[in-house]
Image 1 (cartoon, helix red, strand yellow):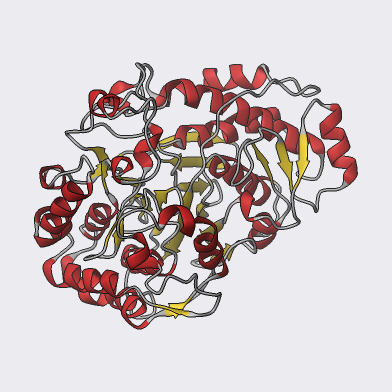
Image 2: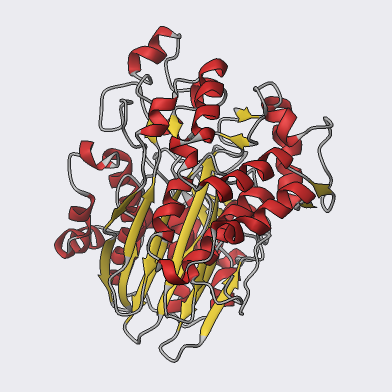
Length: 502
């Protein structure tokens, strides 16, 4: 799209549709999306494609069905109206109509990949191999994702014809068809017959929303991230706390210890307070006030790890970024939550529905389930305006790992002057749970020296070794626009992603 003269926003819509086809285990048209858009000379714009709870999805609805907590798979887990496609529409509305590409052109490559096939990634093949036994029992999943009953090998051609037909239909009928057109009617009927609480009326009442991003001032510039119900404030808070600790380098255990301790404080506030903003006891922006940040930084013991009993969130997600010749920079994140979301898949349209509603609780509190409510979201696209004029879009997948990976990437690049590529590829850590491991330990990639690990243990951290380049540490990426117009971009060697300059 950029090579044809398109904008960064259009490039991201085209890429979002394409990655929904080629990486369907991590994101899709049945999920949510969040955007940060910084246009030259303007303040950043936030777009929330956060799903909302079905009108029928009440605490009583689930209690009556014998649930003591919300399900993560199957029809009852599909309780949110997906917001991604509506967010694409709001993003495209920001592009002047006179220079806007047709929807058919924007969705053409995604449609082609779905209809004619694309090579299976290692990640998709591995995920299907792990989850096929569980998900094949859920309506529509096997028919769409395993039509011959076999897990495709990496590199094998993989087609999703029903999804291709849906993309073609969206191109012809418009993105709003997903909510107030023929596609909405198909999904309304399918979901009701499958046993989901979602109905046509839920789709018809939904629209994504524009908003104002959260921000935090640090020594390198101004940081931006998504507001509640996302964990964007936690990502900002980690960096704001760390900035006040004045750590001298990114080479030693003090660097990791300081960021981990900042993470604990940010996650503690997040776990106690984050919810739909209409239900939060305190506005997220209050945690980012300079006095509050300084107080939290002062409470960190540089010589001792604090206890860490906190719960963790997992998830499957993608992040993408772009910049264009107009000087716009875009940070976009899109997700189904767990791999393939709820697993519930409409065979007619090829769309799997997210399970982000599992983040709600049936117990009283800010995150108690209620109709039309927005869920706690780990998704948070990041953007920074640096003091020297650089604009940086960055992000990652990884649930609880997202704020931690963002912190490592940003500090290494913006504070300690590593190249963008080295900032992303350098050894990382993860505090808390990750896929296949429920321990709350501090997980270290194998490239960290034994000396650094021993120092962290002596500080009181419970450590665990992972491989040298572990997918568990996220799939990060970044795009940087310099004042001169020069563009830097880099992607993660832990992922299947790519960085391209056009």
